[in-house]
Image (cartoon, rainbow, N blue to C red; front, side):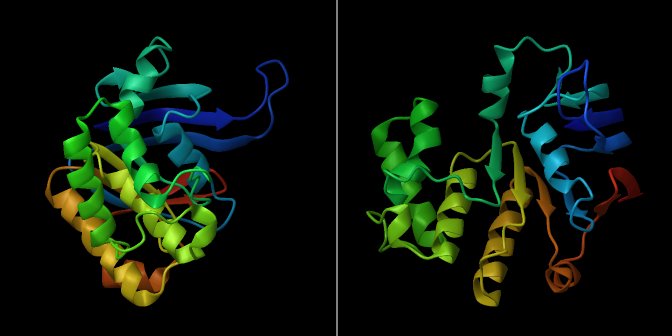
Length: 223
């Protein structure tokens, strides 16, 4: 599913690169695996998730993802691969003019799913995250925790092969955080590869699993 071999990443143009944010990372995550992604602020967790979401390409080393060598893949292939990846962003990235229902339905519509199937899947997913009565609410009409739950529903509604979550419980209370972990574990049980970045040590302790730990861009713990 995911293989990194001596992967590095820096931002900025090739002729004036900034400092490396990821350094010489080598690891392998099998299909259907689960990993916690841990480390202090600035360790490189969000940058690694950006790589795995295909928002950027590595500037060094080799990244294989979903059967493709990402460094060598044609640009036209990346959007097709990205449709197989669900991503929960720290800043939600909901479209302000769309309701909760339409934000969650968006990836299914892009994929060309029938509206009848979309209606059933989106309604069920919003009910699962506790927003079954907020289908028509716009992002500025809900709380931060509710926005986070809409973002989570949008990431998982298409049953992605790879599910990435960047601090997904940051705006949730303990009850909702546990509900989210149940959903992520169910997605993993159904075959999705799941990677969750978190600062919540108590949550990690309650749901032990293999860990990728970063420090100053280096991978210091694998599994």
